[in-house]
Amino acid sequence: MEGGNKPEEEWEIARRGITMVLNNRYEEAEKLFSGQEHSTQLAAGKCFVVFMNALMTFEEDMLTEAMNSLRDIERRCAQDIGWIKTMRNRVFGSPVRDEADRLEEQIILADSQVCIALLTFLQQDVGSYMKGGWVLRKAWKVYQHTYQQILQLYKKTFGFDQTVPGSEFPLWRVVTKSSSFGAVVQSPSCDWSVPNSTQTTPGYDPAASPTSPSSAYPSLRRLNGYRNPFSAIFSAFNAAEENETIPPEVVSRLMAAVSFGYGVFQLCVSLLPPSLLKLIQLLGFGGDRVSGLEALMFSRQGHDMRAPLATLALLWYHTIVRPFFALDGSNVEAGVETATALIAESQHEFEDSALFLFFKGRIHRLQCNVDSALEAYRAGVEKSMQREVQLLCMHEMGWCHLIQLDWHNAYQSFLELKRRSRWSKIFYTYLAAVSAGANEQTKESIRLAKEVNKQSSQPDSNAGRTNVGQLEYFICRRAEKIIGKDPAFCRLLAYEMLFLWNALPSTKYMNNIAQDCQDLEGEEPMTGLRLLVLGVTQCCMGLKQDAVNSFRSVLSVRSHIPDTADDSHVTAFALYELAVLLIKECQAVEEARLLLERAQKDFKGYDFENHLSVRIHSALRNAFP
Image (cartoon, rainbow, N blue to C red; front, side):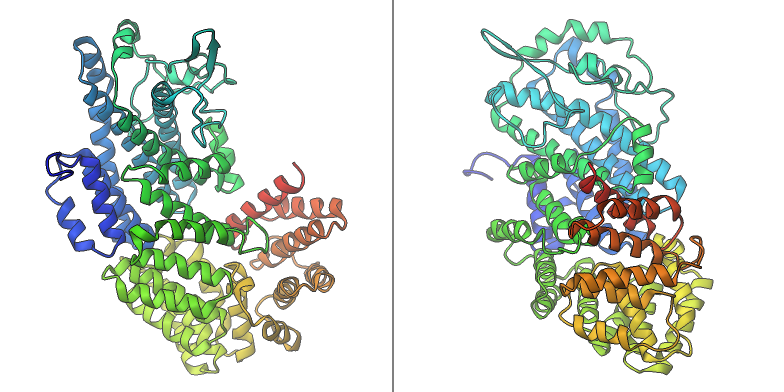
């Protein structure tokens, strides 16, 4: 109760529940959300929590629960704001509160569709990419209409000179016209219907260049391929709608609410690999990373239940996405300053949050303060009673030990994760096998490597979806190589993992790794892998010319190997690393462009192709705009 009299709004209760989850009070939050099925906003808040848990564990049962919850809330919102109900409200009138609730449900509908699309993409097959792209298109249509509606209300309420960060993306912009009496905002078309991700869309009108929302975007008038036959009736009641006044505090909250989903949408679309971006463009929409980040920064400053989620999304981008996809090259610390500021600003509300401790650990790791990172992760495990957060922190602890070349503790950590996690046991088994082999525990390494093959041939029904895809194929081929090999061979496989996860820049043991690569005699897991890892460590140590020579040596020793070989990722990554280094050093820039184009066009179906293709696309766009 606020002030002793005013009851809490539903969105306030939902935000309180999300805050409880983030502050390690998961059971209290469950009680708060339970029995509140009548409230769309509380149901949406619970949905966000379930979705977040699924992304933390990647476990099949959690992913299924999240997908079912999202589809339920999507169907509910699609029914509540369908065109029949809209027509009835406009003909017979509807309270201002109903109008605000309608906008809220439109936001929830689009949010649920974006989350459904993201979970669909996790299945990592062509069919899932097609389905996910289609659902994203439906979400885009709802966001496009709803964002314009709310932005119009926001400018009318707070002044047409108000700038909303992220709103300048051309495909979403609301066009204003100046007059002697002020500015007039062009109203979005009222001819609009609700797309449900379970429906099929028979037709599509590509959007033209922006002039006004109704003329520039004919797709607004034909959202599902059909024109609404009641648009003339709706138009007659536009004047009545203009007289409705939604309270300023509600308008402000709605603007922050829609900015969250809009920001996540823009950010995620901008990070898709080029092969998927082509599909997205065919479906008639796109994404802009800068607009997405600006919208999320705006959303986190609002009072809506999505504000803490916007902060988490920004922390995820700056501490996980940027370094993993090498969006800033070898500078893994590029997002540290922003992430540190985000955590400092959230300290008063989430001081004891285990999830925020996780992100603190990520920051320490990116700064090469691995001991401090381990302290943060241990504190996260101790503070949280939530299994999902504990597993997330334990996963990072295993990687920290690997970064420190602490083979014994890395082996123990991954063995524990293999026992406790239901996601990709094969992944943790392989990491434990490599760590044991590097630590000269040869028999244990062989035992675990053989176990990888058994797990592969007898899939666990509880295993994560990615278990049966690219990750399993990647691991099984490497597990076979371990059997009968010496510790130096296993260490090189460990270095490969650190390289592919872009974790090499975080280690303080560059000299040890470089020396290992130089001293290795005899067989290596893949031709040129030793030189590739050596080149990356030399680059991190500032030995640029030595790194160039190492990458050129990789291409030389692999010149006779077909581009379609199982280990062709070694060549593709060497091409990329050499090109980026040449660009950075302003050497042979034209050669660098040709190297990137060769990696992009000549290599298909190799390990970690999606991750490298995002890096190549980013490098080409930045260096050759």
